[in-house]
Image 1: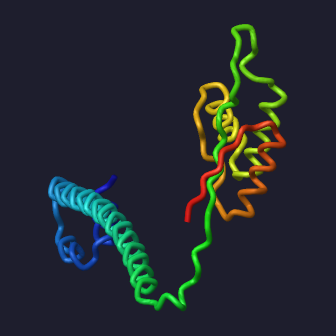
Image 2: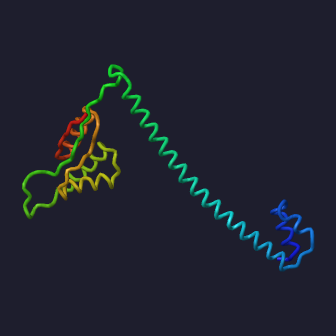
Image 3: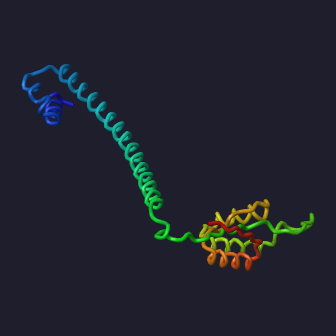
Length: 179
């Protein structure tokens, strides 16, 4: 870059700071030193701006978390201070579990009927709104590995429907009531 171009670029970028500097005639070495100093200052400013933006993003996230916690606590306080006659009644909840099929398995038996397994996956998807992979993994954990897994938690009426759907698909179901 030619010296005149460099002078005009630096003076154009920082007219208040470096405009008077370039009124005199300087050597190429002096102009390059000033340009290098400006470059270092610009890089340092960019780095500090990036650090500032990172800190600001973390502070914004913490602020949102604190606002959420304050809202939750204020709702809990409001509920606690509301007279019991005004409070909404608690709806009894029921949790539906899919349990491993019972019965002795012999060495020659297949792990489980594939058609029954596919129907059970479809039923679990319908009841729990899980995706295909999640429902398949849940059914495999129950049938192949023998784990008891929660499939649905909600009001008693909806839990009864979930139990009917799962039993119709060939699943073994267990219910647990909670408030």
